[in-house]
Length: 116
Image 1 (cartoon, helix red, strand yellow):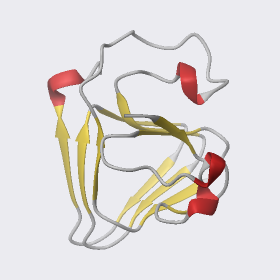
Image 2 (cartoon, helix red, strand yellow):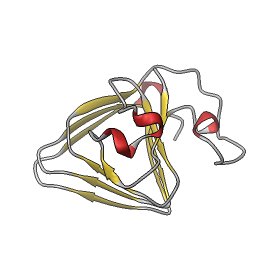
Image 3 (spheres, helix red, strand yellow):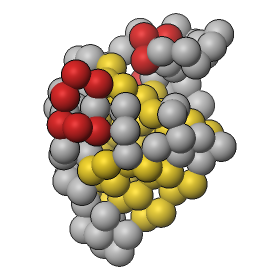
């Protein structure tokens, strides 16, 4: 389990979208706070059982993101492409952002480790 920071607009599956070119894998947490657009173009499980540390005092880095967030989108756009299935083990936080959900999408949020 890692927290992966989005560093540019792009598809979830593209390495150029992510810090260090690392595409998030199953159970990772993703953070986007740079005003980017993230297109979820593949089905995946994100988040994991984590110890909740409450809300972060600032949003300056991926390391101090809300520990319960499977996806934390701040000041950006989240697009979930048609027929994508997301299993989120934790919160889906969309703050000062826009979300567009395609046809046939399934988003399941496992509340076990959610803070919100």
